[in-house]
Image 1 (cartoon, rainbow, N blue to C red):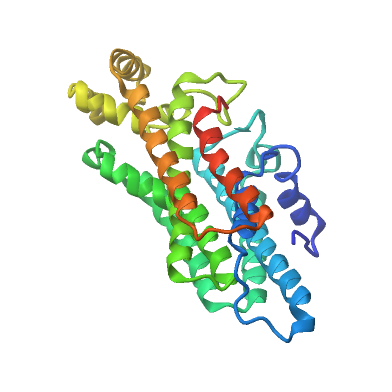
Image 2: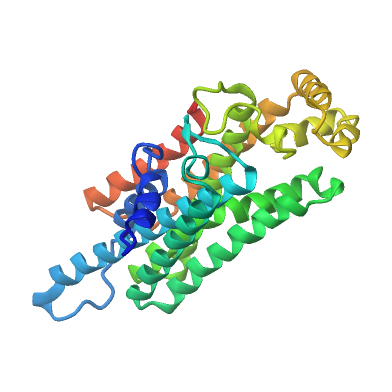
Length: 320
């Protein structure tokens, strides 16, 4: 899907897909979800065309995986510019290598290609879902940039922002895959819940790793969030034990001494442990959503569902 008449633009957009983001987590989730949900074929065409219809459905669901990854990468390109980041998973960020202007255009280009792909699906409900995701990404980033001191200290505000910035993309894409398969509203919502709670677990573990990881293993280096003045779950939960942290957050983290003070309180608290436990809670909710899907005797369906459940545990046990 990534092609352009201007080679430099295509090259800028493509370079982010080569080696840097090798895990392809979201497309993997969506392709597994596609197989996990393709149980009942809703009113297929004439008998002789069933295989063709099934193949077409798989192709359309694969398009959702590609579109989702393009939206995700576009958001990362734009985030790196806003954060003035010069590294992305150990490599030079696109804005650092090619400049802010080309990085902005590369992100815009990916979003436009995602829109073209969505239009080709000719499904207004799916188009609406993924358009809402883009709106959520912008809303979440704006919430982060404009939060007041009180809002930065609110766990509720943080979780809402996390849904917009992280969980919305996975949850609505999972729902889109279900809708393309003609699944019931109940099944589509189970797919949505899986993506939502998995997204929360993913971000919460990211929060933990930002404090406990090393520069070599993390995308933007350890302590990346706090150095950008972003208060995440471990500190928010530590505040419940040490209310003195509120004053530190109010002062901001431009002064490195305030970072040291916050880390000292965090080290004395159970903030990191409780964040891991909260991530586990969401991972278990994601697994429960898969277990609640209608039963199937199809071995491919069962394998995909087992893999989706296994992914929930991998998310919370990873160290990078």
